[in-house]
Amino acid sequence: MSRVMADCRRYTSDSNCSLTIIGDEDEVLRVATKHAIDDHGHEDTPAFRAQMRETLEPAEAYAAERAAEPFPA
Image (cartoon, rainbow, N blue to C red):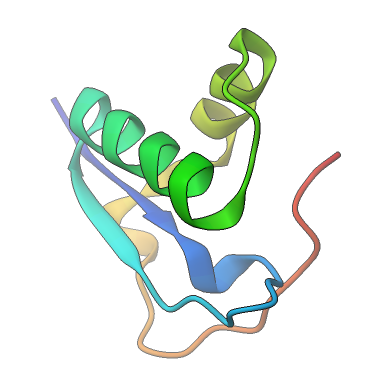
């Protein structure tokens, strides 16, 4: 199984969150979704969980610095 990444720096936020999570897809999805709900106030819905899965990137895409963009609607 290839490793994936969820990178909060990818999206604009009030807190300028810098968390990056890298690991197996199921692990990253579980932890990143919990973080988005608990720390960023997203609502826990099936649609949001599907959206989170779509934002995962290959771990090899990690870069030390990154410009933020709006979270997909």
